[in-house]
Length: 186
Figure 1 (tube, rainbow, N blue to C red):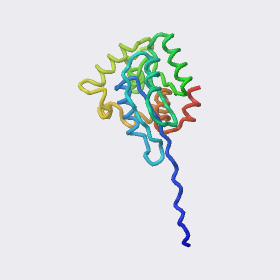
Figure 2 (cartoon, rainbow, N blue to C red):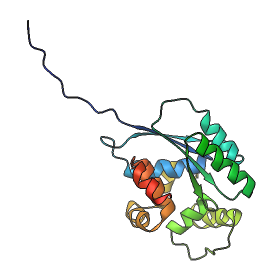
Figure 3 (tube, rainbow, N blue to C red):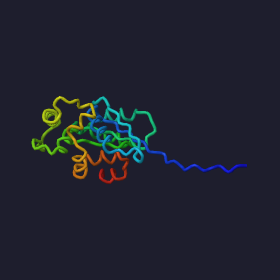
Figure 4 (cartoon, helix red, strand yellow):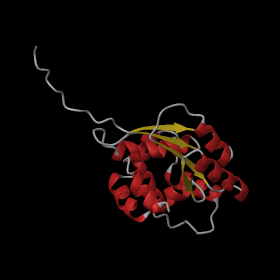
C-alpha cells in the first residue's frame, strides 16, 4: 500500500457582505475596496447597492440577502427621523448585522476627506450633496467607482484613514479587521 502525500491545508477565506443604502455609497466603497483590498489575505467582500428608502427598510432589505457570510454590514445615512434610526439599529442588532452610519450622509464624509473649506458643521444632507457634486464631481457618474479615482488619491485616503473614524471603519471592514472595527465602534 502506498503512502498518501499530505497536501497543505488551505485556510477558508472569510466572506463579508456590505449592503449599501444606494449605488453612490456602493461606488465609493467599491473604489476603496479596489485600492486597499489584498486578494490573497483579506476576506471576499460582496458589495451590494440597495434601493434606498428608510433606514430600517435598508436594514430589512439587507436581512433578505441570501448567502453564508461571516459578517454582514449595512451602510446608511443617519439623516432620518430619530424613530426610524432607532428601529434600524434595533433591527440590525437583532439580526446580528453591523450598522455603519454616515452622519448625516456619505457626501459629508467625502467632503471631510477632501478637507473642504466650504463645509460647515450644521450643513444637512442636501447641502453636502450639492457642494460635493458641484465642486468635485462635475460631469462624473457618482455610481461608477472608477470616477472616484480623479477625486480621491490613494495617498490622500491613507492619511484620512488615520484621521477620520467613519473612513477607518469602512477600511477595517474591507480588510476583514472586524475586531479593530468593533473596538472603534463601541
